[in-house]
Image (cartoon, rainbow, N blue to C red; front, side, top):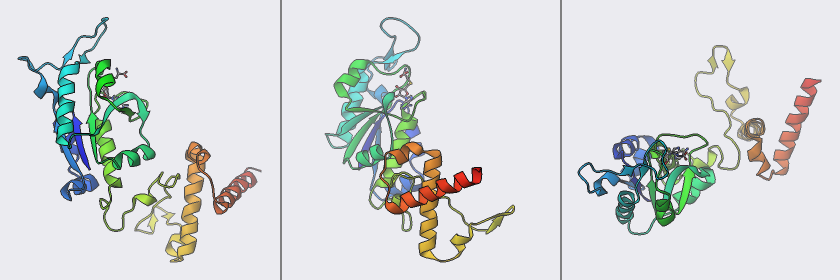
Length: 249
Ligand code: SAH
């Protein structure tokens, strides 16, 4: 997969991607990452990329032309045609489905803006979709773009090492992950749940499903509402709810 990131701070992108799974995907050639700085396409002495907003008010707005030229160069860098995404708090919040959908694209251009944002006409002319990291405002699109690149790297076939699986992560099957434990068996009086030491694979699997279901029901009921439940899963949840009711009596 080829990704080109348009950013006034390209070192933020290249500096943060060299580690862990993302770094491995780059080394293995599963992911190719390049950056384009709109400042390179500003032709005045000060390499200006922003200007004051029409209508007045505080802050600066990124101008169409340098950014547009940078997007053009970014598309060339990834092979010509690529879905072009603007990172924006006004975009659709990124979720697991969006990450998987975009990770299946052969090429992407991610546009990070700064200041008050970009001239609206740039969005009309060049942007295919807008994506948000969440309902809060950051000072630039670099961290959201990095979050997306990192999450997509996990989904690229071959990116996860032997024994790692994106299928077991939270959201993969519409549930949060189950709790994990490693050595030692006892920490400040807290024991590892005995079933995990039993070596009984079927019971361990059942315990994990139970934990994942109950966690999701308690922490993210919205996820369960969107997912259909098997008979076994319904029984697990019903038993859990009955147990709760009994405890409260
Ligand atoms: N005035 C804008 C915010 C500008 S923040 C508004 O209120 O909508 C500057 C830039 O940071 C944005 O243009 C965007 O590229 C990026 N950014 C800020 N918050 C973001 C978020 N939650 N998700 C994605 N990008 C974000």
